[in-house]
Image 1: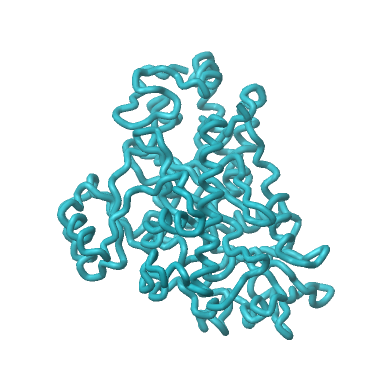
Image 2: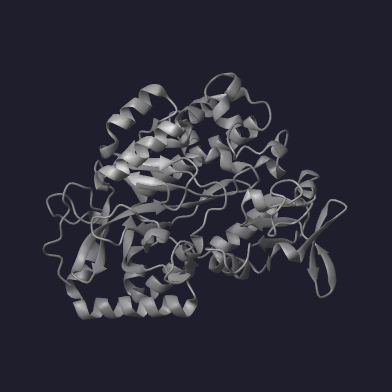
Length: 475
Protein backbone atom coordinates (compact mmCIF):
# COMPACT_ATOMS: atom_id res chain seq x y z
CA UNK A 1 0.00 0.00 0.00
CA UNK A 2 1.40 3.40 -0.99
CA UNK A 3 2.34 6.12 1.48
CA UNK A 4 3.16 8.82 -1.10
CA UNK A 5 1.77 12.20 -0.17
CA UNK A 6 2.02 11.38 3.54
CA UNK A 7 2.57 14.70 5.30
CA UNK A 8 4.44 15.29 8.56
CA UNK A 9 3.90 19.07 8.49
CA UNK A 10 5.64 20.63 11.51
CA UNK A 11 4.90 17.93 14.07
CA UNK A 12 6.81 14.79 15.02
CA UNK A 13 5.75 11.70 13.09
CA UNK A 14 6.47 8.34 14.71
CA UNK A 15 7.04 6.48 11.43
CA UNK A 16 8.77 9.06 9.22
CA UNK A 17 11.48 11.64 9.84
CA UNK A 18 10.94 15.23 8.68
CA UNK A 19 12.77 14.45 5.40
CA UNK A 20 10.59 11.40 4.71
CA UNK A 21 12.95 8.65 5.88
CA UNK A 22 11.45 5.64 7.69
CA UNK A 23 12.48 5.45 11.34
CA UNK A 24 14.48 2.31 12.18
CA UNK A 25 11.89 0.72 14.52
CA UNK A 26 9.21 1.02 11.80
CA UNK A 27 11.26 -0.43 8.93
CA UNK A 28 9.80 -3.96 9.06
CA UNK A 29 6.26 -2.69 9.20
CA UNK A 30 6.91 -0.20 6.39
CA UNK A 31 8.28 -3.02 4.22
CA UNK A 32 5.09 -4.96 4.89
CA UNK A 33 2.95 -1.95 3.94
CA UNK A 34 4.85 -1.42 0.71
CA UNK A 35 4.04 -4.99 -0.40
CA UNK A 36 0.40 -5.28 0.69
CA UNK A 37 -2.53 -3.98 -1.38
CA UNK A 38 -5.03 -1.34 -0.32
CA UNK A 39 -7.74 -3.94 -0.69
CA UNK A 40 -6.00 -6.26 1.78
CA UNK A 41 -5.57 -3.48 4.37
CA UNK A 42 -9.22 -2.52 4.03
CA UNK A 43 -10.20 -6.15 4.52
CA UNK A 44 -8.09 -6.33 7.68
CA UNK A 45 -9.76 -3.16 8.96
CA UNK A 46 -13.23 -4.50 8.17
CA UNK A 47 -12.42 -7.75 9.97
CA UNK A 48 -11.14 -5.83 13.02
CA UNK A 49 -14.34 -3.78 13.15
CA UNK A 50 -16.50 -6.92 13.00
CA UNK A 51 -14.45 -8.62 15.71
CA UNK A 52 -14.82 -5.62 18.02
CA UNK A 53 -18.58 -5.71 17.64
CA UNK A 54 -18.68 -9.46 18.21
CA UNK A 55 -16.59 -9.07 21.39
CA UNK A 56 -18.90 -6.32 22.68
CA UNK A 57 -16.01 -3.83 22.95
CA UNK A 58 -18.32 -0.90 23.56
CA UNK A 59 -18.44 2.14 25.82
CA UNK A 60 -21.30 4.43 26.75
CA UNK A 61 -21.46 8.13 25.89
CA UNK A 62 -23.67 9.98 28.34
CA UNK A 63 -23.86 13.20 26.30
CA UNK A 64 -24.80 11.64 22.97
CA UNK A 65 -28.41 11.51 21.80
CA UNK A 66 -27.56 9.18 18.91
CA UNK A 67 -27.54 6.17 21.21
CA UNK A 68 -25.60 4.99 24.23
CA UNK A 69 -23.31 2.24 23.02
CA UNK A 70 -20.33 3.01 20.79
CA UNK A 71 -17.49 0.95 19.37
CA UNK A 72 -14.05 2.38 20.13
CA UNK A 73 -12.65 2.36 16.59
CA UNK A 74 -9.43 0.36 16.42
CA UNK A 75 -7.11 1.47 13.63
CA UNK A 76 -5.40 -1.49 12.00
CA UNK A 77 -1.91 0.07 11.88
CA UNK A 78 -0.09 -0.36 15.23
CA UNK A 79 1.95 2.26 17.01
CA UNK A 80 5.52 0.96 17.52
CA UNK A 81 7.79 2.10 20.37
CA UNK A 82 11.49 1.12 20.46
CA UNK A 83 12.82 -0.42 23.67
CA UNK A 84 15.23 2.44 24.42
CA UNK A 85 12.35 4.91 24.36
CA UNK A 86 10.22 2.67 26.55
CA UNK A 87 12.92 2.27 29.22
CA UNK A 88 12.95 6.02 29.80
CA UNK A 89 9.15 6.07 30.00
CA UNK A 90 9.21 3.18 32.44
CA UNK A 91 11.77 4.83 34.74
CA UNK A 92 9.94 8.17 34.66
CA UNK A 93 6.55 6.64 35.43
CA UNK A 94 7.89 4.58 38.34
CA UNK A 95 9.50 7.70 39.80
CA UNK A 96 6.30 9.70 39.43
CA UNK A 97 3.96 7.09 40.95
CA UNK A 98 6.30 6.53 43.89
CA UNK A 99 6.44 10.26 44.64
CA UNK A 100 2.68 10.73 44.28
CA UNK A 101 2.07 7.86 46.70
CA UNK A 102 4.34 9.55 49.27
CA UNK A 103 2.49 12.81 48.66
CA UNK A 104 -0.91 11.20 49.34
CA UNK A 105 0.34 9.57 52.53
CA UNK A 106 1.73 12.93 53.66
CA UNK A 107 -1.26 15.18 52.92
CA UNK A 108 -3.62 12.84 54.78
CA UNK A 109 -1.26 12.53 57.74
CA UNK A 110 1.66 14.80 58.74
CA UNK A 111 1.17 17.35 55.90
CA UNK A 112 4.88 18.22 55.85
CA UNK A 113 4.81 19.33 52.21
CA UNK A 114 2.05 21.82 53.01
CA UNK A 115 3.78 23.15 56.13
CA UNK A 116 6.98 23.61 54.12
CA UNK A 117 5.08 25.63 51.51
CA UNK A 118 6.02 23.41 48.56
CA UNK A 119 2.34 22.96 47.64
CA UNK A 120 -0.21 25.61 48.74
CA UNK A 121 -2.30 24.33 51.66
CA UNK A 122 -5.53 25.84 50.37
CA UNK A 123 -5.12 24.02 47.05
CA UNK A 124 -5.19 20.67 48.86
CA UNK A 125 -7.31 21.27 51.94
CA UNK A 126 -9.89 23.24 49.93
CA UNK A 127 -10.18 20.67 47.15
CA UNK A 128 -13.46 18.76 46.82
CA UNK A 129 -11.32 15.66 46.22
CA UNK A 130 -9.54 15.99 49.60
CA UNK A 131 -11.62 13.58 51.66
CA UNK A 132 -11.73 14.51 55.33
CA UNK A 133 -12.76 10.96 56.37
CA UNK A 134 -9.34 9.81 55.05
CA UNK A 135 -7.36 12.12 57.35
CA UNK A 136 -5.10 10.00 59.56
CA UNK A 137 -5.53 6.97 57.31
CA UNK A 138 -2.77 4.67 56.10
CA UNK A 139 -4.13 2.18 53.52
CA UNK A 140 -3.11 -1.51 53.44
CA UNK A 141 0.63 -1.88 52.73
CA UNK A 142 0.85 1.93 52.62
CA UNK A 143 -0.25 2.03 48.97
CA UNK A 144 -2.79 4.61 47.77
CA UNK A 145 -2.57 4.40 43.97
CA UNK A 146 -2.58 0.73 43.00
CA UNK A 147 -3.67 1.14 39.37
CA UNK A 148 -2.67 4.22 37.40
CA UNK A 149 -3.21 5.23 33.78
CA UNK A 150 -0.90 8.14 33.02
CA UNK A 151 -1.52 10.17 29.87
CA UNK A 152 1.51 11.30 27.84
CA UNK A 153 2.01 13.12 24.56
CA UNK A 154 5.03 13.53 22.32
CA UNK A 155 5.69 17.07 21.11
CA UNK A 156 7.46 18.23 17.95
CA UNK A 157 10.84 17.91 19.74
CA UNK A 158 10.29 14.13 19.94
CA UNK A 159 10.16 14.21 23.76
CA UNK A 160 7.36 12.74 25.87
CA UNK A 161 5.48 15.02 28.25
CA UNK A 162 3.12 13.98 31.01
CA UNK A 163 -0.34 15.35 30.24
CA UNK A 164 -2.18 14.15 33.32
CA UNK A 165 -2.19 11.57 36.10
CA UNK A 166 -5.23 9.29 36.44
CA UNK A 167 -5.13 7.90 39.97
CA UNK A 168 -8.82 7.33 40.72
CA UNK A 169 -10.43 4.66 38.51
CA UNK A 170 -8.42 4.77 35.28
CA UNK A 171 -10.15 3.02 32.39
CA UNK A 172 -9.15 1.64 29.00
CA UNK A 173 -6.91 -1.29 29.86
CA UNK A 174 -9.42 -3.83 28.49
CA UNK A 175 -9.23 -2.11 25.10
CA UNK A 176 -5.43 -2.41 25.22
CA UNK A 177 -5.74 -6.17 25.88
CA UNK A 178 -8.49 -6.93 23.36
CA UNK A 179 -6.93 -4.73 20.68
CA UNK A 180 -3.72 -6.73 20.99
CA UNK A 181 -5.56 -9.99 20.32
CA UNK A 182 -7.25 -8.52 17.22
CA UNK A 183 -4.05 -7.01 15.77
CA UNK A 184 -1.99 -10.16 16.46
CA UNK A 185 -4.44 -12.07 14.29
CA UNK A 186 -4.11 -9.47 11.54
CA UNK A 187 -0.30 -9.72 11.38
CA UNK A 188 0.72 -13.04 13.01
CA UNK A 189 4.08 -13.43 11.28
CA UNK A 190 5.01 -9.76 11.45
CA UNK A 191 4.14 -9.64 15.15
CA UNK A 192 6.57 -12.49 15.89
CA UNK A 193 9.30 -11.09 13.64
CA UNK A 194 9.16 -7.67 15.29
CA UNK A 195 9.67 -9.06 18.82
CA UNK A 196 6.76 -7.36 20.58
CA UNK A 197 6.59 -7.48 24.39
CA UNK A 198 3.42 -9.21 25.70
CA UNK A 199 0.57 -7.57 27.60
CA UNK A 200 -1.72 -10.61 27.91
CA UNK A 201 -0.53 -11.35 31.46
CA UNK A 202 -1.99 -8.07 32.76
CA UNK A 203 -5.07 -9.72 34.39
CA UNK A 204 -2.80 -12.17 36.25
CA UNK A 205 -0.56 -9.33 37.39
CA UNK A 206 -3.59 -7.26 38.44
CA UNK A 207 -4.95 -10.17 40.49
CA UNK A 208 -1.58 -10.79 42.12
CA UNK A 209 -1.35 -7.10 43.06
CA UNK A 210 -4.86 -7.11 44.54
CA UNK A 211 -4.16 -10.27 46.53
CA UNK A 212 -0.98 -8.67 47.87
CA UNK A 213 -3.12 -6.09 49.68
CA UNK A 214 -4.53 -8.74 52.02
CA UNK A 215 -2.64 -10.71 54.65
CA UNK A 216 -4.82 -13.77 54.11
CA UNK A 217 -3.20 -16.69 52.22
CA UNK A 218 -6.14 -16.94 49.77
CA UNK A 219 -7.98 -13.62 49.84
CA UNK A 220 -11.36 -13.27 48.14
CA UNK A 221 -11.25 -10.55 45.48
CA UNK A 222 -14.13 -8.80 43.70
CA UNK A 223 -14.67 -6.04 41.13
CA UNK A 224 -17.24 -3.46 42.26
CA UNK A 225 -19.09 -1.89 39.32
CA UNK A 226 -21.76 0.83 39.23
CA UNK A 227 -23.64 -1.36 36.76
CA UNK A 228 -24.42 -1.92 33.11
CA UNK A 229 -25.04 1.75 32.28
CA UNK A 230 -21.56 2.85 33.32
CA UNK A 231 -19.35 3.96 30.39
CA UNK A 232 -16.71 1.32 31.21
CA UNK A 233 -18.97 -1.60 32.12
CA UNK A 234 -17.47 -3.75 29.34
CA UNK A 235 -14.11 -3.33 31.06
CA UNK A 236 -15.41 -4.13 34.55
CA UNK A 237 -16.98 -7.41 33.41
CA UNK A 238 -14.01 -8.26 31.18
CA UNK A 239 -11.42 -7.85 33.95
CA UNK A 240 -13.49 -9.78 36.49
CA UNK A 241 -13.84 -12.64 33.99
CA UNK A 242 -10.13 -12.62 33.09
CA UNK A 243 -9.09 -12.63 36.77
CA UNK A 244 -11.67 -15.30 37.67
CA UNK A 245 -13.24 -13.15 40.41
CA UNK A 246 -16.77 -11.99 41.15
CA UNK A 247 -18.26 -8.90 39.49
CA UNK A 248 -20.51 -7.25 42.07
CA UNK A 249 -22.84 -4.28 42.40
CA UNK A 250 -23.37 -2.37 45.63
CA UNK A 251 -26.54 -4.38 46.34
CA UNK A 252 -24.50 -7.61 46.25
CA UNK A 253 -22.41 -6.51 49.23
CA UNK A 254 -23.27 -6.04 52.89
CA UNK A 255 -21.21 -4.90 55.89
CA UNK A 256 -21.58 -6.61 59.28
CA UNK A 257 -19.34 -6.00 62.29
CA UNK A 258 -17.06 -3.89 60.10
CA UNK A 259 -16.49 -6.76 57.67
CA UNK A 260 -17.65 -6.83 54.04
CA UNK A 261 -19.56 -9.81 52.66
CA UNK A 262 -20.86 -10.91 49.27
CA UNK A 263 -24.36 -12.29 49.14
CA UNK A 264 -24.15 -15.62 47.32
CA UNK A 265 -26.53 -18.54 46.71
CA UNK A 266 -24.69 -20.33 49.54
CA UNK A 267 -25.08 -17.44 51.96
CA UNK A 268 -22.66 -14.66 52.94
CA UNK A 269 -18.99 -14.91 51.93
CA UNK A 270 -16.44 -12.44 53.28
CA UNK A 271 -14.69 -10.35 50.63
CA UNK A 272 -11.14 -9.24 51.40
CA UNK A 273 -10.12 -7.03 48.46
CA UNK A 274 -12.34 -4.85 46.28
CA UNK A 275 -11.17 -3.42 42.97
CA UNK A 276 -13.70 -0.62 42.97
CA UNK A 277 -14.75 1.13 39.79
CA UNK A 278 -17.06 3.50 41.66
CA UNK A 279 -16.08 7.12 42.36
CA UNK A 280 -15.25 8.09 45.94
CA UNK A 281 -18.44 10.07 46.47
CA UNK A 282 -20.66 7.06 45.74
CA UNK A 283 -18.64 4.41 47.58
CA UNK A 284 -20.42 4.53 50.95
CA UNK A 285 -23.59 6.57 51.64
CA UNK A 286 -22.86 6.57 55.38
CA UNK A 287 -19.50 8.31 54.90
CA UNK A 288 -19.70 10.17 51.59
CA UNK A 289 -22.73 11.03 49.42
CA UNK A 290 -25.80 10.01 51.49
CA UNK A 291 -27.92 9.75 48.32
CA UNK A 292 -25.68 7.16 46.66
CA UNK A 293 -27.53 4.06 45.47
CA UNK A 294 -24.34 2.52 44.04
CA UNK A 295 -22.18 2.04 47.11
CA UNK A 296 -22.19 -0.11 50.23
CA UNK A 297 -23.29 1.32 53.61
CA UNK A 298 -20.52 0.86 56.16
CA UNK A 299 -17.83 -0.09 53.62
CA UNK A 300 -15.52 2.76 54.61
CA UNK A 301 -15.64 1.74 58.29
CA UNK A 302 -14.75 -1.82 57.30
CA UNK A 303 -11.88 -0.38 55.25
CA UNK A 304 -10.62 1.77 58.13
CA UNK A 305 -10.78 -1.25 60.44
CA UNK A 306 -8.44 -3.10 58.07
CA UNK A 307 -10.99 -5.81 57.24
CA UNK A 308 -11.21 -5.05 53.53
CA UNK A 309 -8.75 -3.46 51.10
CA UNK A 310 -9.88 -1.03 48.39
CA UNK A 311 -8.03 -0.32 45.16
CA UNK A 312 -7.53 2.47 44.45
CA UNK A 313 -7.68 3.93 47.95
CA UNK A 314 -10.38 6.56 48.53
CA UNK A 315 -8.93 10.07 48.44
CA UNK A 316 -6.42 9.56 45.63
CA UNK A 317 -8.28 12.07 43.45
CA UNK A 318 -6.69 15.00 45.22
CA UNK A 319 -3.34 14.09 43.61
CA UNK A 320 -4.59 14.07 40.02
CA UNK A 321 -6.35 17.41 40.10
CA UNK A 322 -5.09 19.40 37.11
CA UNK A 323 -3.94 22.24 39.38
CA UNK A 324 -1.96 19.86 41.63
CA UNK A 325 -0.42 18.43 38.43
CA UNK A 326 1.57 21.64 38.02
CA UNK A 327 3.32 20.95 41.33
CA UNK A 328 4.29 17.31 40.63
CA UNK A 329 7.88 18.20 39.56
CA UNK A 330 8.29 19.93 42.96
CA UNK A 331 6.64 16.94 44.68
CA UNK A 332 9.21 14.58 43.09
CA UNK A 333 12.09 16.83 44.13
CA UNK A 334 10.70 17.21 47.68
CA UNK A 335 10.24 13.51 48.46
CA UNK A 336 12.91 11.88 46.32
CA UNK A 337 15.55 14.60 45.94
CA UNK A 338 15.55 13.92 42.18
CA UNK A 339 14.78 15.85 39.04
CA UNK A 340 11.77 14.47 37.11
CA UNK A 341 12.75 11.99 34.41
CA UNK A 342 9.62 12.90 32.45
CA UNK A 343 8.60 16.54 32.16
CA UNK A 344 5.19 18.10 32.64
CA UNK A 345 3.64 20.22 29.93
CA UNK A 346 4.36 23.84 31.01
CA UNK A 347 1.29 24.90 32.98
CA UNK A 348 -0.18 28.29 33.92
CA UNK A 349 -2.21 28.35 37.12
CA UNK A 350 -5.03 30.86 36.79
CA UNK A 351 -5.14 31.12 40.59
CA UNK A 352 -1.81 32.99 40.40
CA UNK A 353 -2.09 36.64 39.32
CA UNK A 354 0.82 36.70 36.87
CA UNK A 355 -0.24 33.43 35.21
CA UNK A 356 -3.87 34.54 35.00
CA UNK A 357 -2.95 37.82 33.31
CA UNK A 358 -0.87 35.95 30.73
CA UNK A 359 -3.71 33.46 30.05
CA UNK A 360 -6.35 36.17 29.63
CA UNK A 361 -4.11 38.07 27.20
CA UNK A 362 -3.06 34.96 25.19
CA UNK A 363 -6.10 32.71 25.42
CA UNK A 364 -6.27 32.23 21.64
CA UNK A 365 -2.87 30.43 21.73
CA UNK A 366 -3.52 28.21 24.76
CA UNK A 367 -5.43 25.13 25.85
CA UNK A 368 -7.56 26.02 28.87
CA UNK A 369 -8.77 23.19 31.12
CA UNK A 370 -11.18 22.99 34.02
CA UNK A 371 -9.19 21.44 36.87
CA UNK A 372 -11.82 18.86 37.78
CA UNK A 373 -13.21 18.00 34.34
CA UNK A 374 -12.36 14.83 32.41
CA UNK A 375 -12.98 13.18 29.05
CA UNK A 376 -12.24 16.29 26.99
CA UNK A 377 -15.04 18.31 28.59
CA UNK A 378 -14.66 21.77 30.18
CA UNK A 379 -11.85 22.59 27.76
CA UNK A 380 -10.96 25.32 25.26
CA UNK A 381 -8.44 24.71 22.47
CA UNK A 382 -7.46 28.31 21.76
CA UNK A 383 -6.17 28.08 18.17
CA UNK A 384 -9.32 26.22 17.07
CA UNK A 385 -11.82 28.33 19.05
CA UNK A 386 -14.08 31.24 18.09
CA UNK A 387 -13.88 34.71 19.61
CA UNK A 388 -17.18 34.03 21.40
CA UNK A 389 -15.76 30.88 22.98
CA UNK A 390 -12.63 32.74 24.03
CA UNK A 391 -14.67 35.52 25.64
CA UNK A 392 -16.78 32.94 27.46
CA UNK A 393 -13.69 31.26 28.93
CA UNK A 394 -12.15 34.60 29.88
CA UNK A 395 -15.22 35.29 31.97
CA UNK A 396 -15.20 31.81 33.49
CA UNK A 397 -11.57 32.29 34.52
CA UNK A 398 -12.28 35.71 36.04
CA UNK A 399 -15.25 34.32 37.96
CA UNK A 400 -13.40 31.29 39.36
CA UNK A 401 -9.65 31.41 38.63
CA UNK A 402 -8.78 28.48 40.92
CA UNK A 403 -10.87 26.23 38.71
CA UNK A 404 -8.72 26.69 35.58
CA UNK A 405 -5.25 26.01 34.25
CA UNK A 406 -3.80 26.71 30.80
CA UNK A 407 -1.07 25.12 28.72
CA UNK A 408 0.62 25.83 25.41
CA UNK A 409 -0.92 24.01 22.44
CA UNK A 410 1.33 21.01 21.82
CA UNK A 411 1.60 19.76 18.26
CA UNK A 412 1.12 16.08 19.34
CA UNK A 413 2.95 13.43 17.38
CA UNK A 414 1.24 11.59 14.53
CA UNK A 415 1.09 7.92 13.62
CA UNK A 416 -0.03 6.50 10.23
CA UNK A 417 -3.71 5.52 10.16
CA UNK A 418 -5.86 3.83 7.54
CA UNK A 419 -8.40 6.41 6.35
CA UNK A 420 -10.84 6.72 3.46
CA UNK A 421 -8.14 8.73 1.66
CA UNK A 422 -5.44 6.10 2.22
CA UNK A 423 -2.71 6.14 4.86
CA UNK A 424 -2.53 9.49 6.65
CA UNK A 425 -1.09 10.75 9.91
CA UNK A 426 -3.38 11.32 12.87
CA UNK A 427 -2.52 12.82 16.27
CA UNK A 428 -2.15 10.45 19.22
CA UNK A 429 -1.53 10.31 22.93
CA UNK A 430 -0.35 7.40 25.09
CA UNK A 431 -1.80 5.87 28.26
CA UNK A 432 0.49 3.26 29.85
CA UNK A 433 -0.86 1.35 32.86
CA UNK A 434 1.10 1.03 36.10
CA UNK A 435 0.45 -1.45 38.91
CA UNK A 436 1.72 -0.80 42.44
CA UNK A 437 1.78 -3.87 44.68
CA UNK A 438 4.91 -5.53 46.01
CA UNK A 439 6.72 -3.29 43.49
CA UNK A 440 5.82 -0.73 40.84
CA UNK A 441 5.41 -2.30 37.40
CA UNK A 442 4.74 -0.55 34.10
CA UNK A 443 2.91 -2.83 31.64
CA UNK A 444 4.97 -2.94 28.37
CA UNK A 445 2.21 -1.69 26.11
CA UNK A 446 -0.37 1.07 26.37
CA UNK A 447 -3.65 2.41 25.13
CA UNK A 448 -2.82 4.70 22.22
CA UNK A 449 -5.76 7.04 21.63
CA UNK A 450 -6.16 8.60 18.18
CA UNK A 451 -7.86 11.80 17.05
CA UNK A 452 -9.66 10.32 14.05
CA UNK A 453 -10.65 13.65 12.53
CA UNK A 454 -7.99 15.17 10.30
CA UNK A 455 -6.09 17.89 12.17
CA UNK A 456 -7.95 17.28 15.45
CA UNK A 457 -6.03 17.16 18.73
CA UNK A 458 -8.88 15.67 20.81
CA UNK A 459 -8.27 11.95 21.30
CA UNK A 460 -10.91 11.19 23.95
CA UNK A 461 -13.26 8.36 23.02
CA UNK A 462 -16.21 10.40 24.30
CA UNK A 463 -15.23 13.11 21.80
CA UNK A 464 -14.95 10.84 18.75
CA UNK A 465 -11.44 9.46 19.23
CA UNK A 466 -10.25 5.94 18.38
CA UNK A 467 -7.40 3.67 19.43
CA UNK A 468 -4.37 1.70 18.26
CA UNK A 469 -2.50 -1.34 19.46
CA UNK A 470 0.84 -0.27 20.95
CA UNK A 471 3.86 -2.47 20.23
CA UNK A 472 6.78 -2.11 22.63
CA UNK A 473 9.77 -3.89 21.10
CA UNK A 474 12.20 -6.13 23.00
CA UNK A 475 15.14 -4.56 21.10
